[in-house]
Structures are given as structure tokens and as C-alpha cells.
Image (cartoon, rainbow, N blue to C red):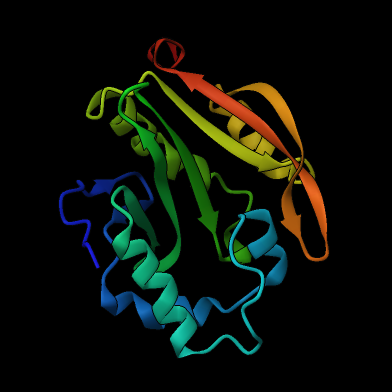
Length: 183
């Protein structure tokens, strides 16, 4: 497993964004499993209930293995993660995703606060030209979040996301470095 030791740590007004560590397993376990969240965030929907130690360990290991992934820590506890992924150096682009696992913290701007320094890092340190996002068409909260951050809706990929026994559309969003610089 490759550890992501080369990413910077970020502190915002309310969050610490840092590399995942093994000590995060109890915090992830405490957040439990919510199939609806797994669907919204494009995560594995086949995890059994109850959510056990081995699945919390797997979640942490996955984030440790991903190069540009940060866990979100709020008030000293793990609440989710944010990542840049699908990096294409030739085209200077990547995609971004965020997962806020604590329902009690929804709607107070923490996802946007976490995305800010990660987008800045992508555009400035990694010299990306474009950062994209894929949001389920039914995820109105996620669509509003990315709209507020300046992302532009660029298209719809029909029946692209498997959800349960069916499929849903993904909305494709993008933010260009020039647009970010103007914000």
C-alpha cells in the first residue's frame, strides 16, 4: 500500500485536513454505515450491516492508499474525506470528491470549507487547468454545493451510476483554473 505522505496538511477556520492514519479507524467506525450516503457519494453499496471494524479499516486503508486524499477532522473527530482523483497530467485535469459522513454537520458549510484548500492546491501546486466533479442527478445538495464553488454544469451522463438494482444519471461539472482565479 502506498502511503500519501507527500500531501500537505490544511487548516481552515473549523477543519483540519490531513492524511489518513490507522488511528482513524475508531473514528470511522463511530460514523457507521448509511447506504443512502454510500449511494450519493458513489461508494460501495454492498457493505453489510452492521458496519464492523474490518470495513472501517478498509475505508481508512483506501484513503491512505490514494495519493491526494485528506480526511476531514472537525472538533477533534473524523467526519469525512475529500480527494482529488483521476489525475491526467497530459491534460492537466483531475476530478474532486467530498464525503461528509456526520448528518449532524450537514448544511453548515463544512464540505465547501474542505473543498476550498483542495481546489487551491489542485490549481496552484499541481498546476491543474481543470477540476471536474460527477454528482448524481438526485443529489440536489451536492449540485448546489458545487454551483456555489463556481463549477459549471457541462453535461449529463445518462444511467451512468449503478444505484441498487438500477441506474441514475450523473451530472458532469467543471471548474477551470481561470474561473477559480477570478473567484
